[in-house]
Image 1 (cartoon, rainbow, N blue to C red):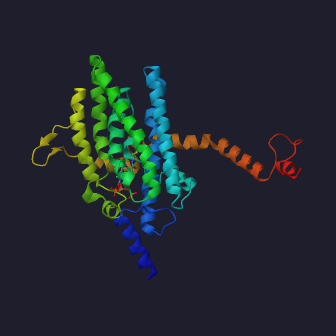
Image 2 (tube, protein in one colour; image 1 turned 45 degrees about the vertical axis):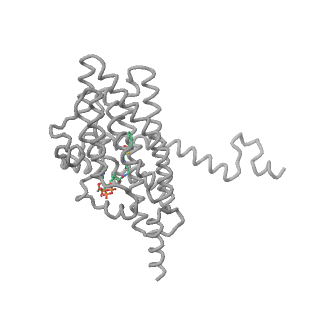
Image 3 (cartoon, helix red, strand yellow; image 1 turned 30 degrees about the vertical axis):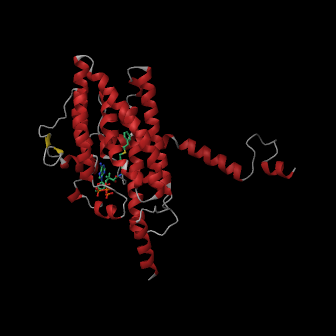
Length: 326
Ligand code: FAQ
């Protein structure tokens, strides 16, 4: 009887737009769904640093380098807020991270594609961050309080990222024939993987229906994908470039752009670990974890020293406890 009351109260809060907070009662499946989504989101931010980090040392100017470094650092920050939000649901950061490193946890399919030219930095900002914002602005209103609040700042930063990406492409699109070709080539390669980022079509999305009922998701995968296509189909005109889709055309009746068939086989293969860079990405994260072992050991040793009251200033110095007692 009590569980029924709790479940009703929970759904009533959701229905009346009251945020669910960490200490509130929640169905176990709600908690698990959030841990899955938030941790995958955090992993995406952390793995997502790699394709762009690849170009920091080769950015064409000091200004571009500074912007790119700041963007990559922002993504690290997003990962950290998101791991913190997930920790409020009772899972440790260590456990989540081990799930990433072992290949058990998913992260966004998009980060398994290579960054071949400088124009890819523009295409990632415009299309990948653009798709990320389309999906994440509604997450600022997601039903779980810590996730919703984390997303507010993330979205402000993503919005800057999107604009800097578009501006990078705009400069290339006004450059030499070679630069224009590089710009078009990057758009061609990043377009379809960006369209896939929104997840499987609604009729093949096992989680959407329940997540909509719990207001974790506010829009379905296909709804967000359509909004994204509609916006990009207009923006690409400003660049004087095209999207690589011969079936893209405005549909008066639907008041939306129609677009061509998505290669879902490619999407599921990338999720299975068979994308062009899956192995490279996980190897890089595992190497960073192994290389960072000494930092974790030093931090743990320092914390232990503090806990046991030993001074770090040398054995002839009074310990903290001795200082306190004096
Ligand atoms: N990649 O039933 P659904 C960024 C999985 S952040 C890999 O529809 P759901 C910032 C899904 O997890 C980008 N896996 O699932 C940045 C599920 O697997 P599971 C990340 C995918 O959760 C920019 C299965 O397929 N953003 O880009 C993908 O209801 C530039 C069935 O799917 C977020 O994570 C995919 N694309 O909807 C950083 C946003 N799509 O666990 C650096 C938060 C689906 O059941 C540089 N997440 N799957 O086995 C969400 O909004 C949702 O989780 C969706 C998927 C919409 C991604």
